[in-house]
Length: 400
Image (cartoon, rainbow, N blue to C red):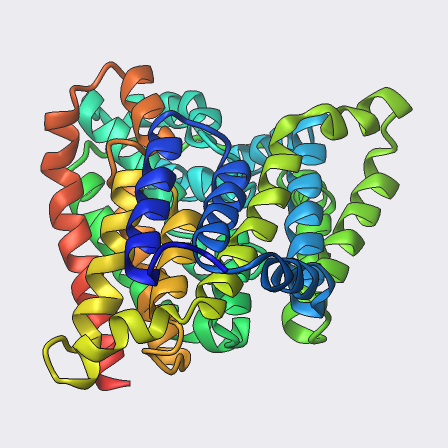
């Protein structure tokens, strides 16, 4: 039997988790290690073996791990086969409006959920924002903000998949509640970043028909995944592997290019993070973490709404990891909050927005460095954008 009471064990384990994240240890290793530490502090060996066995063999765990692996494989293959470059080139040649183009390009890159991905769109955005006469601080804001408008409604986002799996709520239910938030993010992004810009003369872009065909071909792996998941109701893991198959048929990479993603630690780190998140949640349930924190809620001392906002936003901000924020928050609130579509959506958007503006956010740091923009100038635009988006999320929770 463990030798530490649950509350002390939770504090010790989460402090350990915070140190690991601060030291930039891989999130998968961090979550798994924190879960095991928590288990060894409270549970005996047979209980620990049972939790690990149940986690490993659970259909939900297998689905989440497979989906995370497949989505990352699709993302990395897009990059290695240069298909993402072709997709962006097609968009650049089709769209005549620079304002529209700089709004769409970062979001298209955002379809590939890779760390620091905003840096991939920065050169493309820089070229178009030069035409609009934007200064470095607004170039940074536009590239960062519009990259992150797509994820709250993107059905193969690893964070959305993780949230849906851990809370037991369907992806579609969460996504539908995020639509107003995405609309508000786009509107505030335009008002702050693009409304007061110089008018530019639109250039005639030749061969639009051929470019539309090229765009359709390069986008088809992502589209195939979305259709199979959303329209046909296929499991995300299967849908993502279908997307991979479509990409391989179109790109026909050589063996070396195909194998390169498997040598990238990112794909294994994300996969392990999915498993570690589920293990942490199951260990927390096994030690009765809901009983540790539940009395605060049942006695009326703490309302559920602040819990769903403050905890995930704070954890994602300090860790620079929305997956970590979601995993830890669900571990704490399981048994306290009966998750519904509205609570799961608020949990997601709180964690996500906390991450977007965090100084530990890799996209934010790399974009600011690329455009040589001081963080103080960037936050002048990010803070009001955050407040408007958060307010929309809370309104959706309260009214819908």
